[in-house]
Image (cartoon, rainbow, N blue to C red; front, side):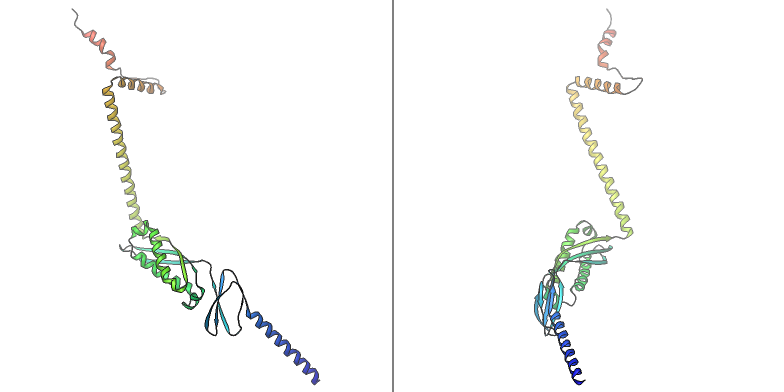
Length: 261
């Protein structure tokens, strides 16, 4: 009986040792995808980043942190900002960034996504607050470029590269919307009046030129008269009334009114 117990104890001990060995082997092998890196710490000291592929670590000695290298799309929530010309607006944005140095993104900052989000919010309020409303509405590319440059400079020590920042939406007060709509309508009316005035000016210039031509060549007036008659005759009218040019009947009038000897 004692011999049987010893055999069973030996088998269980060997089996436990085998399980521990298999567990340690599994724990020592890490598979890192192409889009990730494994930041390795050995006894608390930074060793560096590893991957992609198979990475061997020492169980209970090494500690690892996975870092994603893909582009992160960060949605900046709506911020209430007062512009330089004292107009309250609500604005939000989107930030595109990626990790360039996995080791620094783990060592230099606790949570690089949260830190980038908070930095983007404060920078958005600061940049919009220094600009006037017309500049924010009309020169958005300049605002985006300034935001990208500031956020990229401040996140560079974290090993992060900000590729783009885009202002998404601007929400204006209702009173400002009505004022801008009235201004736009007045601007459209002004442009319409200018276009009409320019058209009248061009038309008067052409009429003046036509009058000068007819003055130099009176026959052109007769041709114009005949053309007008042709246009009137082409209309579907039952009766057409047109004046007779005095030049056509003047010889007959002169002959009639001439004193008879």
